[in-house]
Image (cartoon, rainbow, N blue to C red):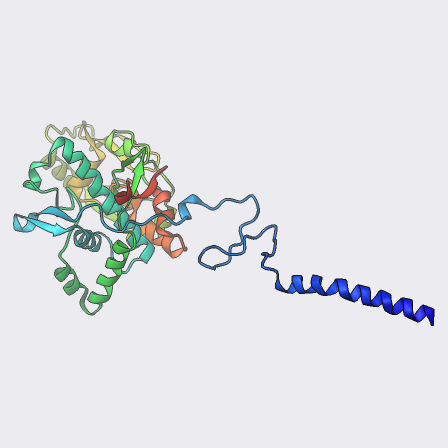
Length: 353
């Protein structure tokens, strides 16, 4: 009898002390401690970043401005020989529409929007100190793509796009609006955000093309460009045709020892200088005379015919537009794309500086 009483008392004691522990376990607000997982961020989306790992800064969200760096911009419309004051955001959209196919990926279009915005801000700061070029007729920028950035009116572009016009315009607008105020900076200053259609497989170092070293315009891999349409083009002409073409454009040529002399190239294979009839000219001049897509040219002379193979399109410095699109197709965001092509830059919201 005594034994049964003792057992009952002991069971009662265990029951009394276990109730509050069970209650606390069921209703605790303390988060679960997981060594390798920070469960959620402020958006409620799960993060699975291992302990000690750091996120890629180029992929991190950046502050987007609430307004553009300027409300309006004066533009010299070269085709109409007049200056017009435009809404700055609208100008950016018209420029992006002129510079990059609207069929490109959204992140590529965003990268293009940031590049155009950065270029304009960099030019604006430069012109404040040095004055605007005569070609601008007093305006901050112009619509001649060989001198500034391309531009086409909204109405003209929507008409050219046809049935997809409104859809494409919204796509361009979203790319500009979603990067509002964002520009690229290096050492606290807006960069010269140059770009080109496609590289020859790697971009060019600015020093090799223009003679000046620019720390953020270095040669980088862009091998995806080899998948671009018309990455490789060809041109063939007879030796006599070549001589005639060169003689019309290069004073003092002498073909007594042949047409071509020494050729100097960049690490990527682009021509920096070439001797034509004993006269040394820049690779860019040779490209211009023959209207070639780039200076990355190789030669194969068969009998009386000169065969030329050209890779890429454009000067090759800065961002490759096709390369940007290929990276976007691989899932890269616009920050990652820009960091891939402009070395050591920082993406910031200019309006917050």
